[in-house]
Length: 271
Image (cartoon, rainbow, N blue to C red):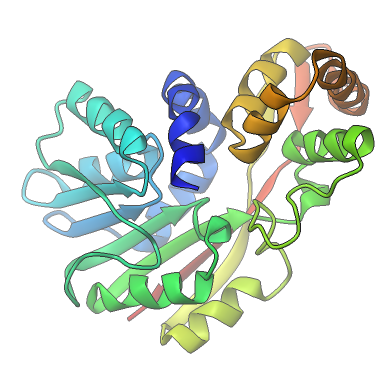
């Protein structure tokens, strides 16, 4: 898993602004739920290019501190470069696993995790770890993707791969983007982890693509296991997948490009 995500880090770096734009509504909902204040210490888990944590750093100010963390060093290097580019001296980076957060109990006022919890093998352990490193009354905010059928910007790619290869995407036993999309899934993790005063809600997360080629150049390259799969299959099969995906996306075409629905689930809990 480390090697897989490290190998697509370049694409995440090249498309960091695109990722930030697409995820802006979710990022804002997370920051609003976290109620960050100046001087607080914040940890972003599974940061990727670090968009949420960088925004948090601007809120907590020079007297606060933000750690951008990911289990792939290649991702934290991208996040660090973006923070430096914004002149944020209150940001550091560290390689951390969600299921084994290498900080003492009570280290942070807030923990943020966008689109990472659903990709770990044991999200219950990751949830407990996030609570453990919070200070008393600290807040943790998690965002995961909602139901696959309501996120066609990615679901159509999975469907096209399945149609051409006859395999389930992701394979059984491998956590994927929609592994926590069921109603009540986040609540079922937060309560046993010991969070109190928790709340979960939906946030619209649509995607706009000017052309199909734009969508095809971005989404498959960011999709971890699928990026590897598409690179390893014969060119004619990859082209058939592309053709199927283009046909499916036609339902969302407009004179201004593709308007693709999306929805995330955001949960906040207090220690």
